[in-house]
Structures are given as structure tokens and as C-alpha cells.
Length: 238
Image 1 (cartoon, one colour):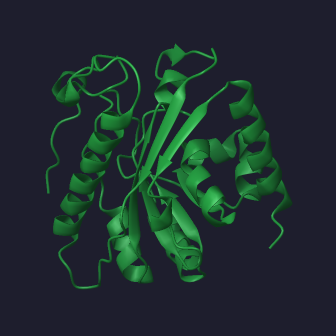
Image 2 (cartoon, one colour):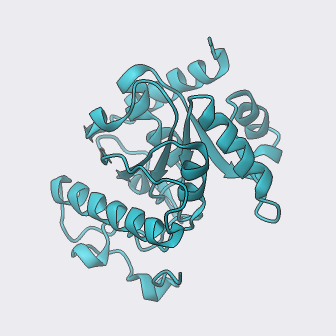
Image 3 (cartoon, one colour):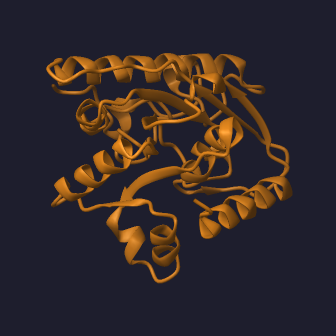
């Protein structure tokens, strides 16, 4: 499928990233399948995560990712037509079953679906409690879940922060696939997914260049970001 709109937007973002002088450090790209459906479960710390999170799939096999995003983005007069043209999936938090069913359909058709299981951006730069939707859709579609970590986007554009100066590093780590099957304990698999996402964050921070005390690194790992409890990002319940 040609996907002219999506392909042109990917090309456009590559140009933007070059103009910003972003340096990419991507590990684990071989964990992405060249064909077939999979749920990509990403952490969320910046407004650029949708664009950054699709880079490994593009590099792996020119694959496109259908991201799940809040419905308000699709209602915007500029972003809405583009999101629909790229066939991303709108999520109405008051009626999420339609988005879930559409994601399962897309996965069964052999596509990649990007999910931010934390639902909103993390102010602590750590992995917040996550929701079970990614696990449930992977089970229903009979596809793997691939945890991912993106680090560095918050340095460019995040809550209360925008810095377009050049030369920042974006580090992305793609984890090994998980293969949940129907009948497994959804909560247990969700906890395992969060544990894996936290380990990927640890690995990514460990190789990230620069100040270990930086504001965009989690306090748990010695960084200067606020502690989860101080910004209302507590431990998961169930």
C-alpha cells in the first residue's frame, strides 16, 4: 500500500529531526517483526513520542505504525485530517470499545499498533502505572507485545518545556517480544509488561550521554525529575 500522506509526513519529520541535529541511538531493532501484527507498548514523556516511536519500525523494514491517540487530536482542524489520513486510531475515553475493536482488527490484518499504556505523559520521567488495554488487545488478536523505551524527546518538547537548540540525543530501546495468550491473567501480564518497560528505561538511561542528574532522568535512577509520588504518579492498583 502506497500510503502517500503517511510517507510524506515521515519524510517531513526526518527533515525536522535533521534540522534539529538530533542524534539517534537505537538498540534492539531486530526485535521488531518484518511482517505481521504486533502491539508496540511505549513510554510517554514528550509530545514527539508519536513521531519518535515510529522510527525503529521505519528503519527495520519501512513499516508504518498505527498509533492510538485521544479523540481530541482527531477533532483538531489541522491534525485531525492528517491523523485520519495516516489511519491512526482515535480513542474516546468514555467509549473505548470502538477503539479497542479497531485496534484488534488492524492487528489481525498484520499491522503494527502503537500504544502508550500509561495513557498520559509522565512528569516523573519514570514508567507510570499502566492500563491493561495493550495486553488485552494482543491476546485477542493473537499477536506479540513489544515493549519500547524512548528517551530524550522531553528535552525538545514536553510539559512546560520547549527547546529547539541543536544536538540532543534520542535513545530508543526495543525490547524482546512478549507472547500473551488468551486465558492468561491479564493483570499479571500487565505487571510484567510494566516491569519490562522499567528495565528498558534503566538500560536506556545507563547508556544515555550527559549529566546523570539531569532534569529529564527519573529520580529512581539518580536524575533530577520529580519523584512519582510528588506528581501523583503512584504505584498501580490491580
